[in-house]
Length: 69
Image (cartoon, rainbow, N blue to C red; front, side, top):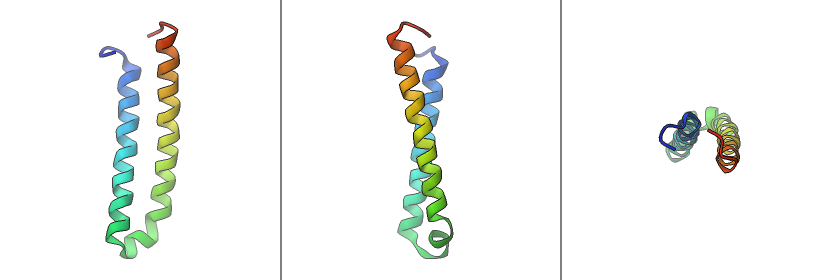
């Protein structure tokens, strides 16, 4: 698993989801103009990144179960 490039791509996608989530939570906590302007957009980015991460995880599991990569 350490040498599998898809594993690192999956980890990067999961990290991106966490970063976007933290930015969104920080915006909600702070409130104000930033939250009013960007809250919905940031959460849409999170959902898109999360969907990509889940698809990559499923692809990784599929390939590993078949003995590939």
